[in-house]
Image (tube, rainbow, N blue to C red; front, side, top):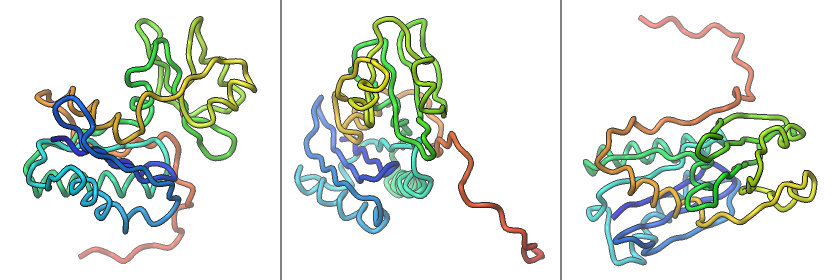
Length: 211
């Protein structure tokens, strides 16, 4: 069984994948409070499938791009569970998750602050990204026959004339399915995918001297 979860945006998603299908899943719109609700929702998802943490063989986790705090919550939880359970943790980007089982070429998109977008282009011979771009530069990422998938894609289709389609799966479900395809291959430890600098300015105060 593979547990997938994601808190990289204003949501909290979990999914349990086994034997080629999703056994249980939950998706909650949640801009704040993910740290407090992640483990209870994981436990609820497992209970729905009459499973426990001991049944897990791998963990798939969303690594962003997206909200700094949200990404850290999921990645930290995945690393902790991986260590405690002795199972691999596999990081999957949200842009990859959107493209899973989608027609290609595909342009996946996630909302970013300050009228920007996180984008990635998928397809043989046209793959590009991931990157952070200005919203108005989205047409520069198109190629003939491309489909737009992701946040606000209907609005973006109306604005730029790029055909859109819904994602095949909710984020956590796609992450769990992708993780299943990577089991048995060497995978780096999940690391946050940050495509923009932190909003907070570095402190001007000198920290305490370490002895």
